[in-house]
Length: 440
Length: 131
Image (cartoon, rainbow over all chains, first blue to last red):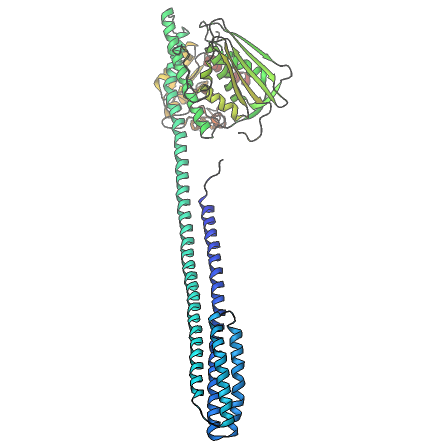
């Protein structure tokens, strides 16, 4: 049996592919979200550091200004605590934003300003003189820190957007993937159901065909029983003598009836073969008697023409194990063809020889009309009756050789032919000595 | 041919086929009775028991093999030789016929040249067995 489209496995494969894709998309999205989260956390940290820096700057200024006014120790202490924090926070911001060029540039701008600011505040503490320079520097510092902060805010929004997009995509992927998976399973299921139904219908149709052919065969044989039977009875002169002309015509009726019967048998056999219903019954039997039986049946009808039949079986070939009936049917087909296409007084020979260790060869050789080379190709095909130039005389079913070929092949054999127009034909079959188990 | 005259019942629903069997077997000198269905066949067997029945398996009112089974189980008809006649040349038909109790089996179309010899053989086999 050839490879057949299986919808269940196809559906499963599709589902697996979708799941794998979904997995990949999910992993990617999660990775993106994860990175974004880390960056967001980082950004919040930088924003926090900026805020701390600003409050350290404010604390420094407030303490310096307070000290300038009141000259108290508490404010001086506050100033001394806040001032080193400025450097500390600048340092940590520089470290945190080391990958961000614009923030580094701002820090570069900020550094001299802060330096000046701290110097001004220190001077204010020392001189206790309040000056406008401090406010100016303070505003510049505020401005730059605000810029840095908003830069970080902008980054935050960007990173949040990436994470949100990743989430969105993930959600879509899960939704689309699930829908696709369900869809694939549903389609595979529906196709499977349809496939099964079609197969069942085909089985039913095939069974009805076989039944029809069996019934047909029965119905056709019933009237043939009367046609062949009475023609035979009359030709034999049993109810009374017939004159030669009458006998000839009765013979024609008889032959036509037998031809029709052969046709019915061939069609039925071919239908059985095609439906795979032809069963083989292997049994052990002697070649000699089986061939003799076929020869006695395949001989031409008495008085029609004389054909010399010779059989030669290699002495080492005794018993074979094949389907005896099918073997005889094959031989009968070949032999009756040989007889049919031989002229009066012709010779038909059967040679049986050893082919190899496991096989034997049966050759049916006639001295008949022969077959044209271009016709040999068509010989074993259905409904190909060759135009023998005397077809009216040599009518056959056109199925005989097809059936023969199929019966030979069914038993594990091969069939071949050589022929020369006007000289005769040689049909040879090679069959196993013992039919393989399970070829039925 | 020196055939002993026997009584033969031919059961077939087709009149032409019935006539053929009657002609062929009558020519051999047998006394041929006919029946076109199972019911008639049973009546004939009851009134004038034959030596042999040629039983068509496809009868209008009953399967010929079922009728064979009935006759082969009844004490008074068991001895009658029954030969199944079928138009099917299907594998397994012969086994079915034998399983139903038939003594023989022939396939339609009947061979008018062989039938007399076959019938003689069945009759001989039976009488040889009982004598």
